[in-house]
Length: 377
Image 1 (cartoon, rainbow, N blue to C red):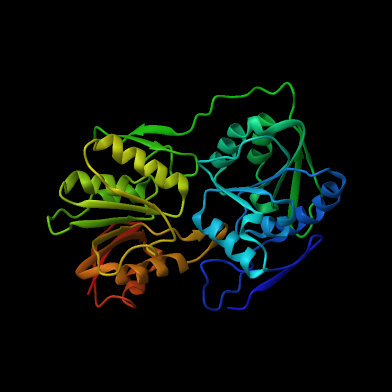
Image 2 (cartoon, rainbow, N blue to C red):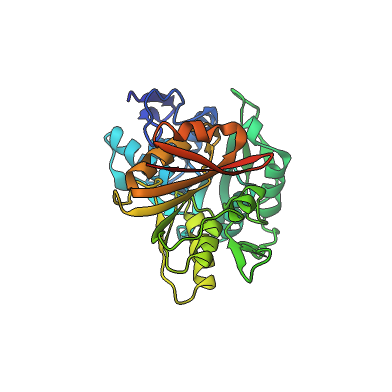
């Protein structure tokens, strides 16, 4: 896999997207990363040993370029953190030159510069800014970066409400920066996250951290999946893959009390939500909770059933590569006779994709929008 080179004010850096994909054409950074790094270079030179905090660095481009400052980098993505480490190694830089923090564990102390790449979920931005209030100094410079298409008015309004007045940059290469400094008169709000809702027709209260998909209500795809979950004592080791808030695995566990559940997601907030929901629902029952790159950490031939609603986006790029990796990995971890159950939008063509990996693929259920497919060997 040939890496691509980012040229910015801090230097030239070789960067790759992870997980590595054969024939990858997308870069591990965008014009907003370049804009932010070039813009901040002069400001950093004027500062005396500045403390720098990076939020939501997609593949480590910001952290790698700013490694000399030993920045702290917060991400909700396991893959983003792994990408940062791997890209530091690729550039022959010390891994400990960047301090990595999960979205559930923010760094202590105050920062001179806080650099934020706009997350896909506005709630995650809101949650981050509320929880970061203690890191602001009177002169902290906060800079938000994004491609213009990912900068709706709600982003500006959220920054102004939680930090202070904003000043926009001009757009360059379809990217823009938003500058803000803490307003001494700002109100520090009580964090509304995690939020909770009552799962319909059940006694279960579902808790969701800010970056969890459909964190305010049950989405229609999951609702359809729940209506068709299998029930059989043969399923002893079961994975809820890409578990989100763990709702699918929780309801499968409700129907199958003998099953040991494994909740796996690359989002730290997702796995934290799944753990909270399962523990509250089943006080005396154990389960496994793993933040990982899909099934990379699961032993081969150890699983009876994988339940999966694959994501079709990574950061802001859309495609089926994540789903295909999940299908391929599922084949490896399933025991003989094990099954993979997948739900997806009809137009995604998962049934045809699964036939590349499994000898038996059959439709379980379908409606106007979704299809549920079972695959096994």
